[in-house]
Every structure is written in structure tokens, then in C-alpha cells.
Amino acid sequence: MDDKLFISDLKEGMAIDSCFVVSEKDLLEFKSKPGRYLQVKLKDRTGEVWGKCWEEGLAASELFDVGDVVRIRGNVVFYNGHLQIQFELRGIEKLEEFDIRHFIESSKEDVDDLFSQIKGLVAAFTNIHLKRLLNSFLLDPAFEEGFKFSPCAKSHHHNYIGGLIEHTYSVMVICRTMARLYPDIDRELLLSGAILHDIGKIECYKVGCLIDLTPEGGLYDHVAISFHNVKNMISRIDGFPKELERKLLHMLLSHHGNREWGSPVVPLIDEACVLFHADLMDSQTSEFIKLRQEMEGNKKGSWSGYSRKLERFFYLGE
Image (cartoon, rainbow, N blue to C red; front, side, top):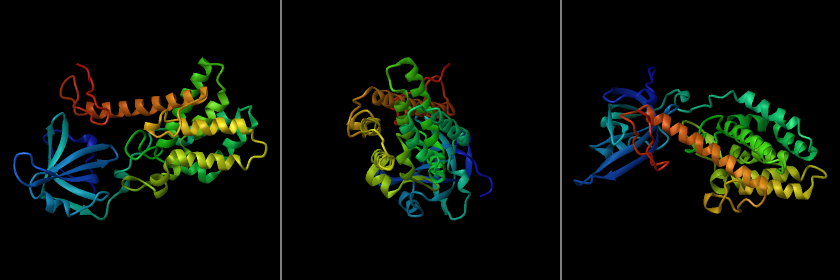
């Protein structure tokens, strides 16, 4: 299709004919009558929207799978605080030819500039061991390519091309500020943890029309991969202090803050505590702003519809 209508441009009452990638698909039971209807989550690079096929849902569901790009002809309605697309069996078909750039969002930041700023900060390090370790990654062209391209998540914060380096840079800036406020903190150790804490995500995700987990990402998780890669690189550096290694690796393992959130250990040193909060601050703030902006696009008064992801309504102003 040549004329792509993006999700961010949908308005209540529109009759649409456009293409989207299917990220979720479910057949759900009617509450008031026998039978099932089809519910799909549709995505493009500007957002996501639910689609409903009320009649012949089973037949419609057999036409495509999750991850397929589909052409939808239907109508945009406003329901329960959100836009959704309603369509019939004849209004959906799987597409074999499409422009992938319509479906994958990219960072709005200049990732080359972010990478240069990270390298520049490391170049000013006085700790030769940390500088050697970080440059072992940053001066590797394959690492640079993956670091600048990789998303940070499949469906949560910074889930787009370039999301990893954008998030890493933000965490680094927060940590740099915190180090000025708390002079007892080892600044270069903290910044090293900020730069390295998520590098395992380079191996965790594969990018097509949707972002999906690699086998390694699903089986090991980025925390374990980051730990393994950094520990392996340290083993190649002669004279790297054992205590410095312990602290840095602990920061990688504990940066999610608690076991329920995916860390095998909780933060036990100052730098790990700061890294955890910096990571949490950027991830939650960026997700909050993104969802609030999406809600503003469908504004129907002072309050948004309910966000299941953040479990709240948003105040959108008078």
C-alpha cells in the first residue's frame, strides 16, 4: 500500500484502509451471547491500537498470525477512553509486500552524537582499569553498531531502534549529576556501571516488523548476559583489581533493585544504589511521558482513559 495512515493520525469516526502489524491476537467469549469475537492489537511506528472483529471472529483469526502485516478496512470508534478499529471478516487480509519502515520506530535522538559523548566521557577517566575495560567495548565496531541500533525492550520503555543507547545516555547523565551531589561516591565506577548495565540487550532482541526476543534473551536475560560479557572482558585485562571487579559486577546484577524485578541480588554498595534509582527514574519517566502523550491524542476532557500498563488515569489539563 502506498498511502499509509498512521495510528497517531486516527480520529473517531474515520473510515480507514491501511496496514498495521499484529502484535497480539485473541479470540474472546462474548459476555451476553454464545460465540467468540476477535481482538487484535495493531501497531506501527507511531503507536498501537486495538482492533475488534465482532462477527466471524474465528474465520478472521485464521487469515493471519502474530507478527504478520495486515490490511485493515474498517471504522475508528471511541470506546472506554480509547480509540479502536472495528472491522469485518472481509475487511482484513494478510500482506506479503510492505515497507518495514512504517512499523518500527527509531529514536529521535542522534545516536552517533550520543555515542561520541559517551566515548568522550570515558576518555577523561583517570582510572586506567575502567578506561581500558570500557574502551574494549566502545572501540569495537561490532559493539558500536549493536549499541546504537538495539532497542531497550520488547514492549516497555525505549522499545525502538536506538532505544538502548538513548536510555544508557540518560542513565549516565543522571548518575553524573548524582555523583556531584554525593562526593563520597566513586564517580568513575558509577559511570562505568551506567554505561555497561544493559549491554546484554544487544544480544537479547531481534528486530523485524516487531521487536522479539532472541533465544539468548529469553533463556538468559540481559542481566546475565551483561554480567558474563563484562566479566569475560575483565579477564583479558592484566592487573584489573579484584575489588573493582566485584563492585562493578555487583552493580550489573543489582541494577533492577530487587529480586521481584529481575535482580538476583539487591544493591549493597553506594554506587549500585544510585545506579538502580537512575535506571528506574529514566525507564519509568520515559514510559510515563510516552503513554501520557498517546492519551493526549485521544483527549475527551480533563482525564484520559485508564492505562493498564501504568495502572492509572492521566490528568490532561482543562
